[in-house]
Image (tube, rainbow over all chains, first blue to last red):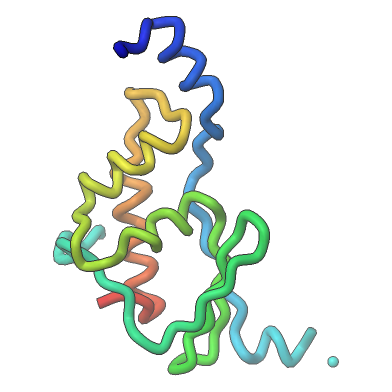
Amino acid sequence: MELKDKDQDQIKELKESYEKPKITTYTEEDIMNQK
Amino acid sequence: MLKHTIITPLKKDKIVIKNIGNELVLYNAETKAIHVLNNTSSMVWEYCDGKHNLEMIENKIREKFKVSSAEDIKYDIRETLNKFNELGLIE
C-alpha cells in the first residue's frame, strides 16, 4: 500500500527533532574532583 | 581542518558502553575518560561498525530525525567522527 502525502507528513511529525551531536568528556581528574 | 580519512569508521575494542536514558556513556579504559553522547552522536556511534560510510550514516539520521533537507548534517557527522577519532574511540 502506498503512503499518501498526508501520511508521509504525519510520519515526519512523529520523528524527533534533530539535535546537533554532542559529546561531553570527563577525565579521571574531573571525576576525582567531583572531593 | 577536517580529516577525510575516516571512510568506514570502526569502534575500537575495550570501550565499555552503557545506555542511560537517551544518552550513551562510553568508558575508554586506555585514557580512563568517560564520554557522554547525546541521542544524535549515539546514533553516529552505533553505525561505526566498519560497514557504514558518512553518507550511509547521514541517511540513517535523516530517517530517524526531523531534519530539513537544507540542513548540512554531513558536516556535523564528520565533526563527530573526527572527535571520536581524537578521543581514541574509533579506528
